[in-house]
Image (cartoon, rainbow, N blue to C red; front, side, top):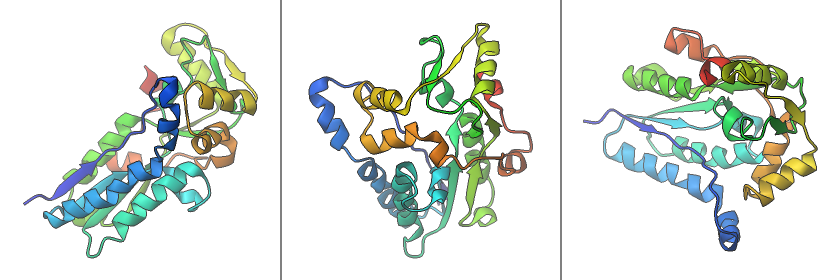
Length: 234
């Protein structure tokens, strides 16, 4: 009999032809995530005892605190509200350390261009650590974790430290540039084709930032220190 199921969900930005722009914008992220409840129901019905779901730490900001948290709140709620559900473990990571490269393409652009104030403390977590935590949970007894939520933050850094780390890793200076919210938002919406509400969250880092310290859950579950941003980039 099956004992565990591991659900991994990743949001990916893709480039699409201009004529398909409205189709992409109208494809609700909420609809895309809504299937989690259905998937979990099927899993439990077939004998699965535990679902491990990768969510986001911004769910903790409240149901309508921000768009990213909003669209992940309902899938978590759908799974939790399944009658007689098995164990449901929610992993809530903060900003992925991989986003340092993906979001702004600092190497190709000759620097990091963002709205984040240079001294704003932000929490990050390595995708490697997220996967490792999920693996540990899935290997251990289902009763060990029950319906727990694990917030995951492995490093807290300011943009200046991130720029210095990236420069050391590639052996070339990668300067940091704080740009206006208007310019950054315009780039997200018009070039990356990011929907308005998501672009607002990605522009307003200071407004939705909640990871002001590392969480001990990673170190306790893995038996080692979490990867820092620089360690991950290296």
